[in-house]
Image 1 (cartoon, rainbow, N blue to C red):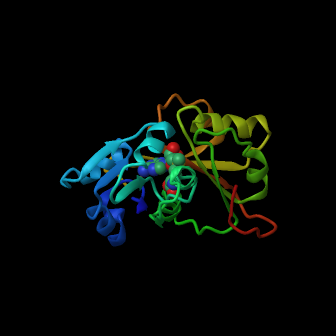
Image 2 (image 1 turned 135 degrees about the vertical axis):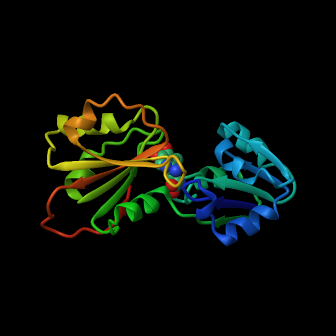
Amino acid sequence: MISIVGVGPGHPDFLTFAAVKRIKEADLLIGAKRHLELFLDLRCEKIAFDSEVDLCRLLKKKGRIVILASGDPGIYGILDTVLKYAGERDVEVLPGISAFQYMLAKLKLPAKETAVLSMHGRKVDIVPAVKKYKVVVVFTDSQNTPQKIAQTLLLNKIADRIIHVGENLSYDCEKIKTYKLEELASSEENFQLNLVVIEKCGSMDSESPTSFF
Ligand SMILES: C[S@@+](CC[C@H](N)C(=O)[O-])C[C@H]1O[C@@H](n2cnc3c(N)ncnc32)[C@H](O)[C@@H]1O
């Protein structure tokens, strides 16, 4: 059995009981270093992986394999990659709290008229979604930074937005800050693990449902 277990935004307080139970039963724990560090006291085999090649090889191992996934594995996560390499083996998915859910909760923003996009390792044109939705959440990476996102909006003459940047969410060093577009576009801050929420100032004319792209 291969279990893909969402561990939430990162702090152990946001792990589900189901996740902890399954992780304790594992023969092999696979995950990013920051996720494996949550389980230093467990004695099973642990392997940090960096690439799809690693994952493909590791999934051929015997026993109960648990893959630790950031947030919810199905939300721009590792789920489809694991399914690609799992072969005939049974796969189960245990969802966790997504970093985007955590951030919206912190901002007290209900997830309506909201789109969720990912620029993590992908090229995505966020402009159409920003024009359509009142709230747009964007997962970022080291190339697609909060500054680049603010610059893109300004280049496209979208001015009536503010951007909330959520950094190291749920960890003790969490930082959530709200910026005007010009301020963020020219900021020299070196943001660590983060996502952004682009919010329209004022109200929208029409209601649109929550969407994932
Ligand atoms: C590949 S996506 C995975 C999203 C994940 N499946 C989820 O549901 O949260 C990874 C991105 O999520 C965001 N992220 C994950 N954990 C975070 C955290 N603790 N604080 C801020 N952003 C986080 C970052 O934008 C990161 O680059």
